[in-house]
Structure formats: structure tokens, C-alpha cells
Amino acid sequence: MNRASPFRERDSTRKQSLAERVYEALKQMIFDFELLPGDYFSEAEVAERTGASRTPVREALHRLRREGYVEVHFRSGWQVVPFDFEVFEQLYDVRIVLECAAIGRLCAMSEQPATLQALRDIWCVPIEERSFATAMAEQDKAFHTALVTASGNQEMARIHRDVSERIHIIRRLDFTQPSRIEATYDEHAAILEALARRREAHACQLLSTHIALSRNEVRKITLHMLHEARSRHAQGPVGM
Amino acid sequence: MNRASPFRERDSTRKQSLAERVYEALKQMIFDFELLPGDYFSEAEVAERTGASRTPVREALHRLRREGYVEVHFRSGWQVVPFDFEVFEQLYDVRIVLECAAIGRLCAMSEQPATLQALRDIWCVPIEERSFATAMAEQDKAFHTALVTASGNQEMARIHRDVSERIHIIRRLDFTQPSRIEATYDEHAAILEALARRREAHACQLLSTHIALSRNEVRKITLHMLHEARSRHAQGPVGM
DNA sequence: CAATACCGACTTGTATACAAGCCGATATAT
DNA sequence: ATATATCGGCTTGTATACAAGTCGGTATTG
Image (cartoon, rainbow over all chains, first blue to last red; front, side, top):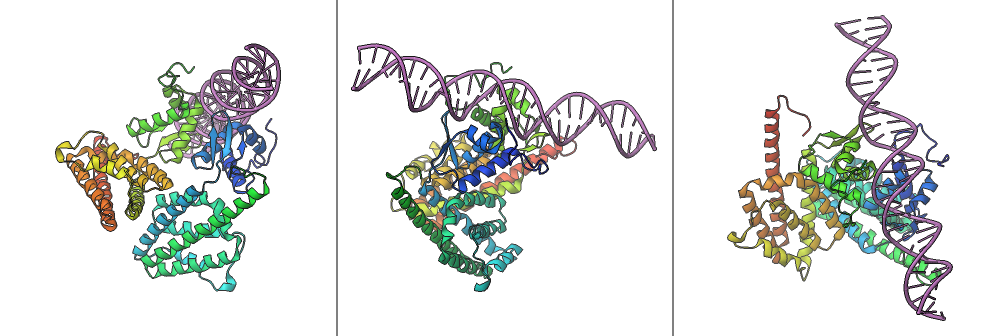
């Protein structure tokens, strides 16, 4: 078996291992809701779809498991972990803690890194130059990740990146409303300004509010989605 | 092959998977300096020593890799990652950030969890009741972990636990001097007292100093160890 | 008819076989 | 003598074979 598949074609690009490609593909499927929260599936199915054997599939799955995306039931298959909003809210709070710490460090620097100027070039622009693409969620994530990375503590940055990635699946929902895109531009610009002026307390205050706002918006949207989903199906499915 | 081994004997205790047991064993070997920082080894060697096949060994190794303990060189074997003091100091700083956040939450609670009273029963005791066992490092770790867990954010607690575990290998060195054990008792008691009185700023101050002290002590001790190791061997080994 | 025992398909966990790349020793050529 | 090419053993990456447990449907028994 293991006939040709999109994964095995490009033997020229021999940088990533097969296990890593399967990992990326699976995470993408989860993010694209091709695999829904609560869905059950088996290693064999994944191997079939990706064209790889079970070995790299298992490696990818166990990595996703440790990162909190899926869970395994002993000899009874895998499951995409159902949404747990309490977990997401806790992760939002972790973001607040880490990013405020980063702001503290940045404000204490006599000379701030060049990254901050690059961020200002993106976010502190006149309204007509603002991009309101579908990639807004990625840009927002990049902003916050860059902030922590610029603070100089790479271990903290790594942890923050993992947390951000984990939240990403629902954070995207925040940018479906145009008003939220505007608000994000305004708030990012204000944070950068306070940062440049070394107003630590003010910057932290702005950033905490900014993240908390996003968290609340997402909570509202997700509850709405849940309500709709429950209306469509006769009796409410338990999964997500 | 795969003759009897300590790992396969107890088929009654069928709770942990073989891969997990190998993971624990490998981490223990690293912590016990049976595998030294910088050491190279192969999957086959580990399989031989543990009596498992390469499959669970690989699963354990890749988990340790993601956690930062080992690294793999493509088709050239595995290596225990050499000590990088910058990384350790960054992880100490992450601890400060997370634990101060936990203190903030605990001080804001109208009714603090019962865990705190349990901690006081351990740490706020007269001098003659203090235990100065070799397990001091574990007790210290448990204190800080309990603090974050009690704050209520389980995701933050999970992250903090991983960071603590990663540092543990050098944190133990801090308790080789009796004076440091005394200081730890005093400082933990002071932190718990400030916490009970809801003196957030004071508690954070005490805790930051406490962790920073520990960090500096460990830095000194490790540099001393390095110096000694370099003296023993003719030319200084690069590894650790 | 209801309850239970059993069987078989399907699952993950583990062991092994095979593929492909790295690295140093050795031989060869200049 | 030195530089270079080649080859063989050892390494991880991947595929497959086997072991052992889960679960639901079905037959059997009261």
C-alpha cells in the first residue's frame, strides 16, 4: 500500500520529516474544523488520508496529545478534545500574565529592540492604510508573539507561542466582525505608544483590557455558535 | 531478544505504558547524572538497557526532546542537551512571573483555599520541628507548585510544573548547604504570612527575592562545579 | 421475552524489518 | 606525504507484523 499521495510527492523538499508534515496536516484539519471537536477517529484512517504509515502518524498524534488537541482512549481510538471554555479562558489569562511581564521588561530597557519599530510601522498607520484581510487573526497573533519575543526571554516566548497557538482556533472568530478589526488596530497602536513612552502601568492596563475584550467577544461568539448548532440538531450534541 | 528486564516483570501493574516507563527511567538517568549533559547515545543502547524495543524508546525520547532534555542529530544519534545557564536563568524568571501572578490571584480571593493552611502546617513550624532531609528539593518544589495550583488557573499550573521540573536538575544543588535550608524555611514562612494578610506587593517582593536568591546560589554552585570539572580533566570538556 | 455469555471485527501498544543518510577508516592517486 | 575518493558499519526514519484489549451484535439460556 502507501500509494502516491500529496505528502510523498516532493522528495526534493527533504527538510521536514514525514511525522512533522502529518502533524501540521492534522493540526490544520482540526483548525479548519475538518475534524470537529468531539470527533472520533483511528490511526489507520489518518494513515490512509495522509498516505503515511502508522508510525509517523502515531508520533504526530502523541505530540498533538501532549499539546492538548487530541486524546487517546486505550485501544478505543482517538478523539479531538471537545471545547472546554474554562481552559480557553485560563489560557487567555496566562497570555495576560506573560505579555504584561514582557511589557515590564521592555519598559525597563534603556534601548528598546528594533522589533518594536517594525510593529509600529504595521499598526500605527492612518486608517486608509489599514489592511482588513482575512489574515487579521494571524497578524494579531504575530503582534502579541513579537512583543514577548522582543522582551528577550526566549523560554517565556516559547511558552507564550504554544499558548497562543492553542487559543488560535477560537481567537479567529473574534475578527469576523469589522468593528473588532478597527478596535484591534486602535488598541495595538495605543499599547505601542505607551510602550515607547515607558508608561509600564498604562501599557499593562491597555493590554490586559485588550486581551480581556477579545476573550469576552470570543466567548459571546462561541456561545452563539453553540446555540445555533444545538438548534439545528434535534437534541444538543455533547461534543463541542 | 527482549529478555526479561526490570521493566517487563510486573505485568500486574499494567497502568503505565512501556513508553511512559522508559520516559521516566530516562529522565531519572539524566537527573542522576547517569547520562551526563553532552553525552551521546543511540536508541538501540536505550532499548538494550531498558529491555524495550525501539518503538516505545523513540516515543519517550521524542517527548524528552520536546521538553528540552535531549536532542536528536539526524541519523547521527541522540545527545543530552548541554547545560545552558542562560536558559535556566530565563526559566527562573518565568517562575517569578507565574508565581507572582498566582500570589496576585490568591490575595484577591475572599476565601483562600485550604491548601494554604496545609502549607503553613509544613513551613511555619518551630525550628526544632523542621526537617532537613535530603528531600528538601522536592519539598521546595512542592511548595511553589502548590502555590500556583491553589491560585485556580490549572493551565498556568501545568506550565509552571513543566518549568519547575526542567529546572529541578540544578535546583537540587541549592540545598547542599544547611544555611540555604534554613533560609528557605524562613522565606517560605514569611511568604505565607504575607499571603494570609493579603499583602500582595509584599508577598511578591519576598517571593521574587526568594527565587532570585536561589537562582544566584545555584549559579555560583554550578560555576564552581564546572571549574572543578575543568581542573580534573586536562583540557576543559565542552559538554557541560 | 429478558438477561447474559460469547465471539469477532477493530483499536492501540509493541516488536521487528527495511530504507536511507552520516561518518570515519582505509586505500588510492598526485 | 598529503589530499581525496570510496566503502562499510552504525544511526535514525519509516513501514509492517504481531499482541492484547475494547465493544457491540448475536446467539443462547433462563
